Amino acid sequence: MDWNKIRSKLWTRKSRPFTLLALLVLAYLGWQIVARIVEGGSSGGPQGAAVAVEIAAIERGGIRDVGSFSGTLIPKSYFTIVPKISGRVKELYVDIGDQLARGRLVAILEDEEYQQQVIQAEADLGVAKANLQEAASTRDLAQKEYERAKALHARGILSDSELDAAASAFGTRDARQKVALAQVANQEAALETARVRLSYTRIRASWEAEDEIRYVGERFVNPGAMISSTTPILSVIDLEPITAVIHVTEKDYFRVEPAQPVALTSGAFPGREFQGRVARIAPLLKETSREARIEVDTDNPGGILKPGMFVNARIEFTAREEATIIPYSAVATRGGLQGIFMADLEAKKAAFQPVTLGIIEGERAEIVEPAGLSGFVVTLGHHLLEDGTSLILPDDAPAAASPASKDAPGDER
Image (cartoon, rainbow, N blue to C red):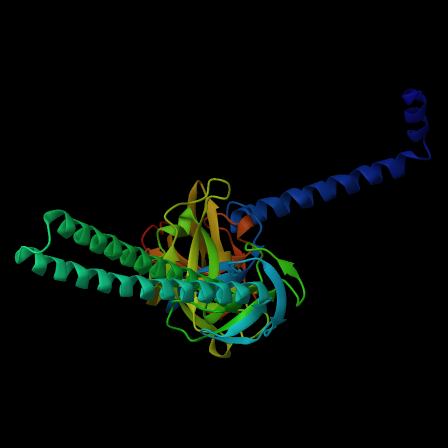
């Protein structure tokens, strides 16, 4: 492209007035832009132009430091009923969700074999008792013979050898009676063992805790099933109270204490809150998650809360009744300092105030330092502000107010 030809075409006699006019218009526009920039810089803050913002009043009131956690409900107690012997399930008397009283019969196994063992043990015991009776009778007879032999020996009628023979016979009969007595004891033990094994065919729900009522959580077999001594039949759970398991990080771990109140909520019961207390705190944090297990026991009237349900837990760590509170959205950072922009409603200026925050509850934050702060803070638009920037206040802002932080520490302008 030949610029010399183009310039020569533009600078012809006919086009010269229009070119001069365009240059004059451009010069005027440039002068207006520079004037507005200079005017804005003289009347505004470091940013020049005023910034439209939203503001909110600093409040005094109560604030709480509440930790929120999610967890799962588990039974307070859980165990499975397992038979002590093998056999076929003859009867099953309970089903899922049924109440269980302590000692209730829940199932019966086929018991013909064990009944026969009891009959056999009873017969063996009868034989042993008969043998004992015979042995006792012969012992008594041998004892009488021995006593008579001693009397005759003392009168010189019987010789020493005859006395020794009578004593030996008595000793033999006495030993046979003791053996028979031991056999009776052995058969009695065998009979008791057979009866115990027969009782194992009657499966009952039993536990050591004080509560008398529990519930069937699951049923694992049906009548007619062949089971071994390791086959679970039922699971038994305790629903009152129920336990919520939550996990906390090391940030909150050392703030949790035993017996600390906990409020539980569930999506299944909107608007309802269940009160519990911290029951157990794990002494370690898992390496994989860096979290510790916390168990919370809570009352469960009517057993409406069920194991496996998802719950939210809230633990109140600290509460203050008279605190200086601002919206958390007002917090900003300038020059490495955390602070807020105070809104001077009279001068319509922003002033950066470094602050120390305390409790943060949702969208509310406590100011610990400086104490006694009051006035208005910028909650929206502070990312465009610097100390001394002019403000464009909302239409519903108070018409005039004293500067918010003239006496506040750190407010130097």
